[in-house]
Image (cartoon, rainbow, N blue to C red; front, side, top):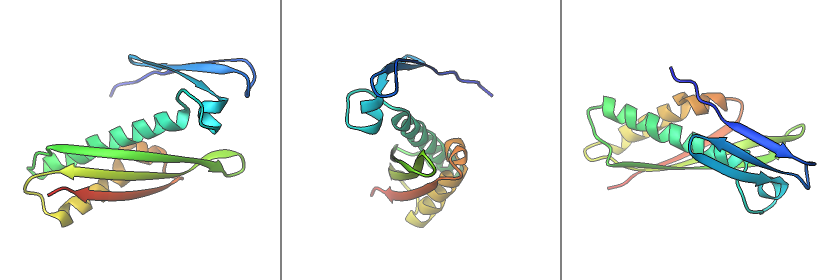
Length: 139
């Protein structure tokens, strides 16, 4: 299996400092304000959400393909909540998925979506965090 790498550099104090996260062709600034307030830039939680939504969508597409169906689209949003749990912690992740899969029964889609939520590698990474799922099959 592949190994992936990301690099982050932080300069300065927590509140006044700034940093840059780099992985693949992405490079984005982050700061105290972008993480704990509404400042410009990215943050680790946003990137965790991107990883989770991408992983879930791909895993669900694989499960659908195993059923002999071809998904036209699988679109997932991951909302990552940063709260307190003996210090700052990711306290909840809400997955919201909308998929277009011709010929797939809604009941089977719901089962596959639940399986993807439980088994995609990023969900497994966050096993100690509450993860909710809202999955809708477009018709």
